[in-house]
Length: 196
Picture 1 (tube, helix red, strand yellow):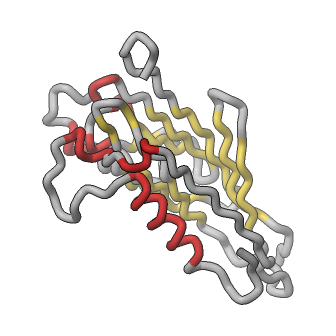
Picture 2: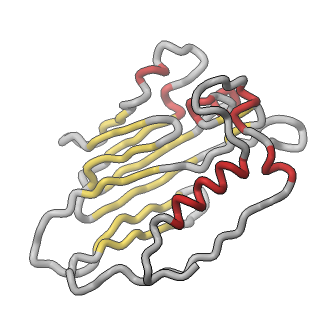
């Protein structure tokens, strides 16, 4: 949080473009799964219906809007209560999880072999990512060189979900256990051509 004990403002304002079209967009926290509908400027709050009965959570803090079949917007603006809510991946210290977003494109088979992909633009910072899709079958996956660095400081022994009085199943894991789990999942995707 901020030095005065208040939680910092969190704003996610993404423009998503895919020339092939976008079938759906999914967000892990808060859980939202929205598919394109054939009408413009639809504010899709699917996955948010459970919040409508909860007076302390506003629906306008999370939205997915399709401007067209090829363009959409994702906006997340959790207030301080939502930043501490488990549905947002929050703890009493604020949000502790990364934004996990998946875009399902709708590639149409054509004779065009040029690479396409999904462009994500963060309007708050200007940062962007372009994920390419190569149509030409002669191109194959490139070998990868992976370097993993794990934080081993004392804070990695803490259990983020404990501050939420989590008593569920599976048991609450330490930050180090979560980091090792992520590293193992990454290593399991490597092939004989990759280096580690």
